[in-house]
Amino acid sequence: ETGVTQTPRHLVMGMTNKKSLKCEQHLGHNAMYWYKQSAKKPLELMFVYNFKEQTENNSVPSRFSPECPNSSHLFLHLHTLQPEDSALYLCASSQDSTSGSTDTQYFGPGTRLTVL
Amino acid sequence: KNQVEQSPQSLIILEGKNCTLQCNYTVSPFSNLRWYKQDTGRGPVSLTIMTFSENTKSNGRYTATLDADTKQSSLHITASQLSDSASYICVVSKAAGNKLTFGGGTRVLVKP
Image (cartoon, rainbow over all chains, first blue to last red; front, side):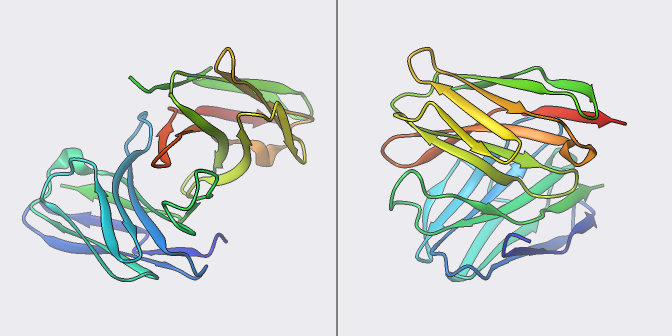
């Protein structure tokens, strides 16, 4: 295991539902990331948090709302999603997103989201 | 535009054989290149990372090469095993800001 856990592992929701994805890292890292992985497409960075502060929002629609209460936990709140939002959502962490470009990101197992 | 292109998109090899995956990039200014392995239903796991001055790096049966002049990298898998069946993702980091650009991955299937 990489030290990054995600729950739930699978989620099916309707377009009017509200749900949240949770990520927790046990590595003592200060940076956390949300990625979206759609079928046959490269990973897309969504959000970056460094020391609990959001440092990057990669033009993500407002129906995705991140929350980082502390350096170990990261949430992604979902509401009024569309079927095209169905994808694997990956969380990652690293020591510090600004400390140096060799900073390795450790990924969680992902949450497989299906929007009906 | 910063891009990372991988080839082939997929390949099938017999257990015990070798294979080489390719990665071409246009990311600039370049900082480092990583190869990740992603098993089905799992998150990516880092295999190697190479900076500008490194030409080759090994991790067990995985050997990555980097030619920063031609902006090409390869990942060579030696004596493939069934557990090597996975997607292999090339990731290039841009200097200043540590922004990562991901390739689309090569899906490898090792058959007995």
